[in-house]
Length: 267
Image (cartoon, rainbow, N blue to C red; front, side, top):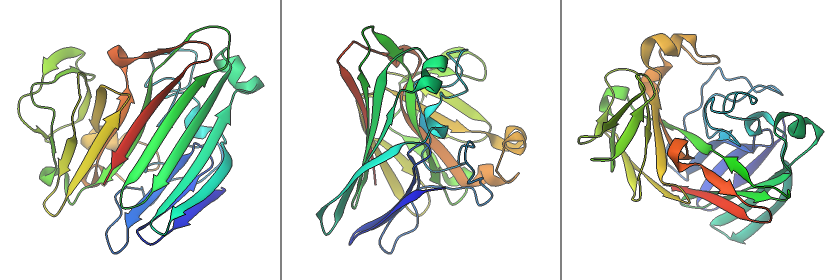
């Protein structure tokens, strides 16, 4: 599997061309900011378990014609440029274009660009360009896996009083206080317009999103965790997914010749 590896004065990162999948990022002298399953497949056609899968042009299973989370996460992107902006900042651009295979699955012409900026922060800008003659609808997510010291120590702040869909019960509910993890969690929060914090016993991770008002919080817990591919049975204790998204009610319509950018910055 072909990867782009970045080392600069402030941080290091690794990105697989398959899926434009960032699977490592850490600041110099610090622990990784992304969780990666130690038994993940690194095989063509199989999604990497951990890091930041790109879910596009469909999040979840809301388009029955597409695989779960769309086709981008196993598609081969083209590496178009790497720029050293300064000693501390590196910019990588990866692009996916429509092909006969994608048109069979999803009948639209597009250009999808992921710009990754590696510095003391990790910034991702996922830009969808419609080069077709008809409007299309997208749902999408940067499905980020964050490591935690133990799931019982993790709290997500910044979602108090936000409405959410509980995907496990299909109920529309409202968050009260911090999100904590005592069972399986699969929620799509809406009306999110401020910074989200993941607090652990030894650090706080900041997540800032633009071009998005929805956030997905996920942990498979015990039983589902055992059924997940490329993941140890006990791995659910080690991560929380906080996904920068355009999901459900936050879908986007992209008109011919127009673009939409989902941006996430984490540090």
